[in-house]
Length: 291
Image (cartoon, rainbow, N blue to C red; front, side, top):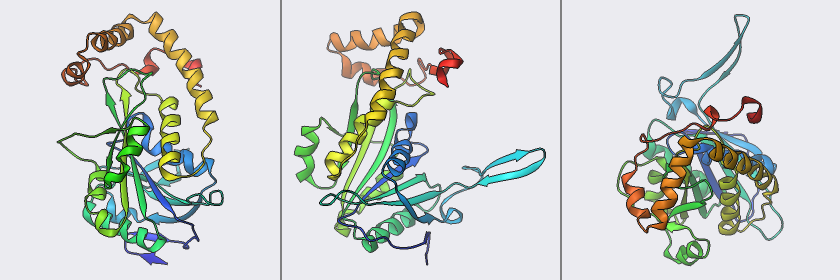
């Protein structure tokens, strides 16, 4: 069965389903957004049941298809895409619909209408979009900010330390999805993780684990994140060793720590720019340690 923009293989039977969306692209620093969607779909044995039509929402000159060529022969072609997975949870908990997708390049308003109409068809009454950005925070900080469509969720945000966003500037597709969500009777949440500039080219397993716990709390389902916690423990040890031995990174970390102690953290946050000191983690770690 096909709806315009979404190819549907079948409609799953779900109890009080929640939709979680993780995009690759502009709002996917350290692969937190799409990485969380991939983690959830694999961890919870998600069943693929629908796909986004790439010809409608992607510009192939901007999000180019990926090819794998061996001995002069094309072995694999991967288009920009979006895949929906259905997850059956424990009795009494919300079931999940997970969208793992590249951020669309085209027709964002139409994309929103397609997603919201699909939510209506699936009986979804809550949508959580995920994003992540580079910020002047420490690798030990687990800072998450959020947008919500229902002020009754503010106490839940406060309970888990989710900051309410104050922002004016360019938007990812998340903003388009949130704009008219309440008119459809759907509760909208957008969670944004703040990632340290000096830890690029790696996956922040600690933030993934923290985000997973927040999703389980807000979405009323069970999620065990032990493997993410273990991966973060090992990576954290490597990071601390690297900081001890690399003056370049030591200087960045100490500058942020001093700003916090002096009580000028917010001013420092505003004054530091992304291009002032960007350090790729892979440049400072033994290649064997990254395997």
